[in-house]
Length: 536
Ligand code: GLN
Image (cartoon, rainbow, N blue to C red; front, side, top):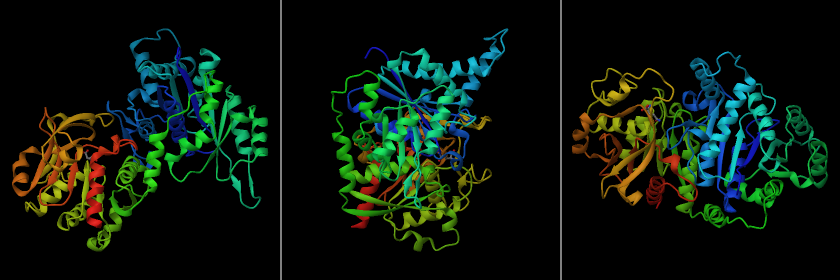
């Protein structure tokens, strides 16, 4: 294809309509027709990245190969498209302003008044086009966070309006995703909020080319006609997006609704090819071929917001499909375990996952849960903080160092089995300063980790400050907890395993970020295999 086609997805009526899933589904359909696609998220908040936000505010912080701390939608993009994203795929208002203000201080705009239009909007446009230049793409899909009409997203909308005139008509497409509320008393779907939302977009100078309607009831012909009429659209450009039972069904629904065909037609591209969705359909049918249900407990302090553990939940679904089992994921908050009979709470489980996290809340309950798993042969996967707690538990109850701790939680501990390395000790700035992104890891042949991966050299993504304290490594190994994954250059411990346990593995990295439906993560697959064996 000669030029890159730019597709913009805005949302209206309410937030949380699943723009990310729609963007990823469209990307999937175009990719399945042989096009090269990337997706970007523009986030209107002033944080430079998602790394400094509590998961309660914003759900999981997804980490890319190059160490960007991003919005969780990037996880959907990676999982649906089997691509890797980077810093360039997530742009925030904070990042835009940071660049413009840094440029202003350098004197780049000497003599000029620096303004939202054109300076901020130019920088937004630069970021959008910059992504197009990072690869050989046919399509760049840009999702704009928030809803049309939000004060925060105005500069993004204005930038898109300008781009409409920077590009040839056949290189630009605007898609608007809205909600059609169903009024039970009237037994009717209502179009008015959508009409208003489209009007707001039009007032900002953008006419949507395609309207996607989230709805719990099918759209009747008359509703479609009404929407087309009031929103200045062809009837074929009104797309129904019914609630789906799983997000992985959405690409197929969008295919049935001919979203991809509509996009290609409006961008003057041929529609003759047929998207190859066979492996995707395979995965979906695999998720339905359930032989058994496994009860997996996830202990973490943000369990009230399941989005906080998005990639872990998805990785379990991918591995579950591979292992032909359904996952009954039970979120266990530390508060629920507090003061309870841990054995009674955890006995019904076939596997336990200790989540990543920050701060002291819930640490003691996590350690108690790990102790139960270790002593009762319950398969356990500890991720990042979960791995660190696994180490602390072993130090306290096997090595007998009762006061062992991570210095994150007990700075003065006598046994700092988890601590800061010299590179982190003097770091004051919080944003973007952790050990971030993909790092190599050398596995011990014959270990559970090496068996799971089927290789001894891997690369996984990190997001943490604290590390296993190598001063104690020999003590741990002598007592039966071995480091089976090591960073080849620094010697940092990336994986710990127990020798005399069916499956107890802790990873300092986050395996969940690399799991996709078509490539379930080997550690999750192997964890579920162990859970299945326990079930048997
Ligand atoms: N708080 C721990 C650290 O910074 C673990 C971080 C995490 O679980 N992502 O090392």
